[in-house]
Image (cartoon, rainbow, N blue to C red; front, side):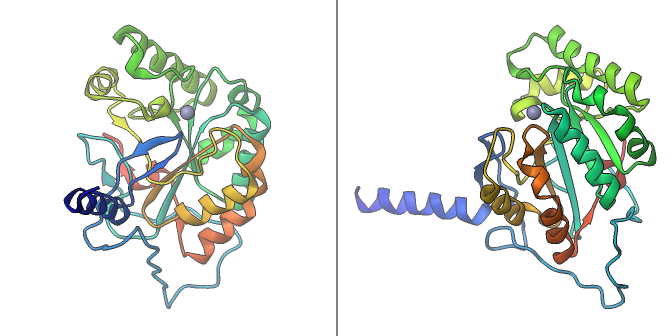
Length: 274
Ligand SMILES: [Zn+2]
């Protein structure tokens, strides 16, 4: 490689390192978030409160002044500086894992946003467990389509049908409105699919910046790595209710959140729906 090419490659990899761009999630490229005040990889910035009382046993509801959704694009993180963490959990391929997530939330006060596929029996099997958490606002439900197709390979009619069928399921089973929040399966979307979804009220695609990378099976060691790497202030992190690995890491998740002084939130805790 000649010197110029080599320097170019060096510069490109330096940019990747600086902006934190990475292959994560379902294995798809997650666009880097440019953090103006940060020169390195996203770093944990502790904000200890000298007046804080001893750490409570359970996470509670945050007291936030909600802000309007930014609009006009996907959501990758939470606005501004702060100590908030949005853990979002997708799919629900394993009913037992969904049950254990519900128990985790009930036991710990952990606030979660599920992007569910109604075709999975887990969301019907566990409705009685989840409903009180949804009613109280501790758990929020968002639309991940009925059966998890890639929206970019569907006709407009099928995009509408996928979102509408799941929307109806969420309303019927849980009595709540998911709009405007949806997560395109595999993170695949474009201006056209966004416009079709927006046409029926799904105006806010929710992406992520940080992943437990457990849409497929991973090891406990990998899970520990992702938990430590990505549970960071103002991040939206994606996990999945598909494999049991995560269910062995709930205590660890709570500990990391506590150690870093983070406040778990749902999207509704932070944003006013448009
Ligand atoms: Zn998914």
